[in-house]
Length: 53
Image 1 (cartoon, one colour):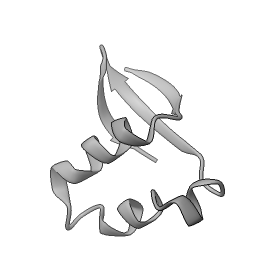
Image 2 (spheres, rainbow, N blue to C red):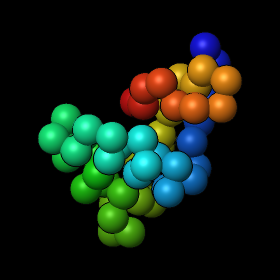
Image 3 (cartoon, helix red, strand yellow):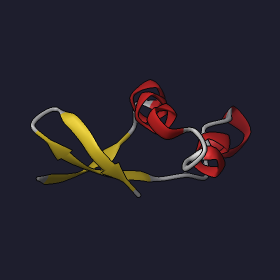
Image 4 (cartoon, one colour):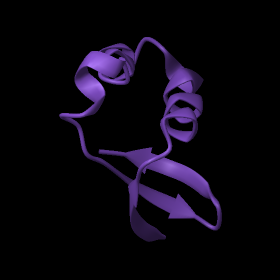
């Protein structure tokens, strides 16, 4: 696994929507109003996201 910093909102959203009820709060942070205040990190296996923080 590789730790990376994510900057692609669509990539983050696609992962979070895999379990909407678990990630509902984080999905709200993708709104343009909050986006500038967030930093997203992930662990990736090959090219796919395994988890986000």
